[in-house]
Every structure is written in structure tokens, then in C-alpha cells.
Image (cartoon, rainbow, N blue to C red; front, side, top):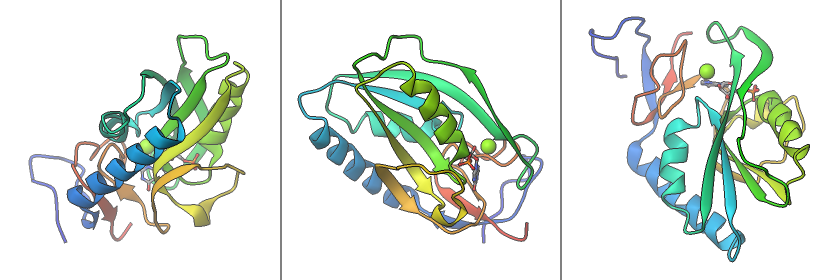
Length: 183
Ligand code: IMP
Ligand code: MG
């Protein structure tokens, strides 16, 4: 088990779930797959902030296609681990998506509510296609119907942190994925 340094407040014990090498290898595979599937086309990556941050930065560098980047922000966990609230969207894409191939980039999909709400919003802009890539998926927590085209790893119902994912806005900077213990 690892703990954060004492310099960081609000520490919670966690265990390593996915190490950096494993994540990097999987992201390279996803990039290859996406580049193959969309060969000859250009792509608009729409990152869902803030959890997409690290994943998107790594994934985009593994995609060998003309690619534009846009962001939309969503908050569904507003006060910690289990207090789920309605999805609140902020920002939005600043380019026309009509006729474009859109790939939404998420850090983690749990109930599917966040990504479903955003996909619905993007579809109204009449893109040629809207697909989803997520680094992590918690399939047993699904409550909305979402079709995830690309996923890094399916995980259990543990609360995970790091690689862009937070617990009360902390831990996003961890370079690996950890699993909170005793929460
Ligand atoms: P959904 O709407 O239930 O699919 O939740 C998706 C959002 O919840 C993600 O964008 C994350 O912000 C957050 N979330 C869900 N599970 C976790 C987790 O294990 N760690 C950190 N954030 C999580
Ligand atoms: Mg969060």
C-alpha cells in the first residue's frame, strides 16, 4: 500500500491498480486502433474535463490523423466519493461539428450519465459520427445506455484516483491509477 507524502493534505490510503507502463502500452494500442478505424479522415477529439486531461494528452500523441481538440466540462460528483448529483455541463465546443467525425474522450465512465448527456448535446450539432473512448470503464455501475467504442480497461466498482482522476479535486497528478482503500 502507498500513501501520499505528508506535504499533501487530505490524504487517503490507496493501492496501485494500473501502473504507468501498463497504461502507456494500452493507450498506444488505442491510438493505433483509432488511427486505423478513421484512416483517410480527420477527427475532432472532444475531451470531457477534467478527468480526460492526462489521458487525452497521451492519446492524441498516439493518433496519426489530422486531429482537432475541443473540450467540454462536466461535473457529476460535486462533494466527494458517493454523493452523486446531476450532470452539470460547462463550456462547449467552439467549432462547427456538422459532418465531422467526433470522438469523445473520457477518463472514466461509471453510470454513463455524464457521457450520455454530452453525446446528446453533440449530436444536435449534426456530426457525421459521435463515438466514445474512455480510459476506464466501470461496466457494473452502468445506468444509462451508452455505446463505448474504445476502452482502456474495465475495472470493478472501486473508487480510483490518479492519471487525471480526482477525489475531491485531489490526486489528479498521480502518474498511475490507484484504488482508494477503506472508504
Ligand atoms: P458517470 O456520469 O456516473 O458515468 O460518472 C462519470 C464521472 O464521474 C467521471 O467523469 C468522473 O468525474 C466521476 N467518477 C466516476 N467514478 C470515478 C472514480 O472511481 N474516480 C474518480 N472519478 C470518478
Ligand atoms: Mg471527479
